[in-house]
Amino acid sequence: MAPSRASTPPLECAVSDLTLAVGQLLRRLRSANPGGLNLSQSGVLARLEREGPMTTADLARAEMMKPQSMKTILAGLQEEACVEREPHPTDRRQILFAITRKGVDERKQRTAAKREWLLAKLEQFDSQDVATLAAAIPLIRRLGDSTLS
Image 1 (tube, rainbow, N blue to C red):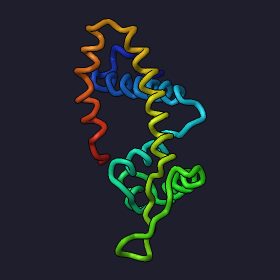
Image 2 (image 1 turned 30 degrees about the vertical axis):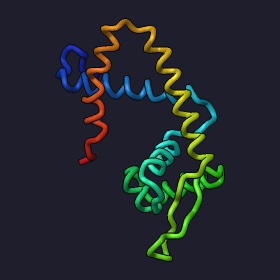
Image 3 (image 1 turned 90 degrees about the vertical axis):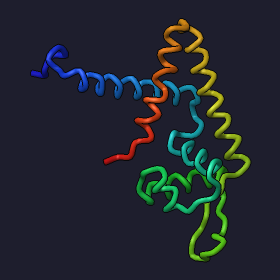
């Protein structure tokens, strides 16, 4: 028999509730742009747009995933003409991946769809709820910026 919620320590309840809430919000945001880029692809395009051309290994490290998984993501983005290969300026053995104009446009379209959905939902909240949510953003950001260890 699972322990009752009343006997579960408050921190464990908060972890469970936050995990469920963030997961549900991410699923809703993903559904706001059906068919477009997935979360991993969008993350890679955002990083390339922000930081410039990168190698597969550098992208994998930055996105905290295995190089093989990053290769699959980059292959899909290249097939969709969202990224292109460039020669490395100092090491001919390496290839850099850079975002294309189409990649920038696809990412902006996905971001706009998510923002529109979220804005429409938040407009239904009262000002106190919006202020509470806004106050939690720095904490959520700090959690997201934490390293896994």
